[in-house]
Length: 134
Image (spheres, rainbow, N blue to C red):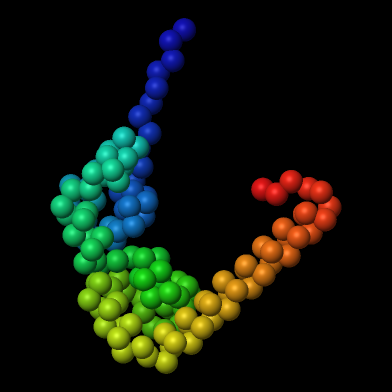
């Protein structure tokens, strides 16, 4: 009995998400085809010019915009940012530092601080009970 190995493929939207780029800004041939795991790995290892340009200049998808601004995706929505932004637009927002951005950054900092506190508390509890840390 021989085993046939099927090539693992994904939709362009999934590949764009894994690459951290906005699908609608990718070339038409990328949007219309399917991407194999091998092709995705090749794009990540040696990105073509279009991918380098998209990552550098945008437009960026919401998760990337949120990360660059230091806020959550929900924070972007509360701030009225629903569209993809270019690097230039993100830099302008950082420069202007509107009140909503300051508030969302502070909220995000509190969330991170609380997550770290909980992680430390759990680690101390695990240590006391003799459980291995994961």
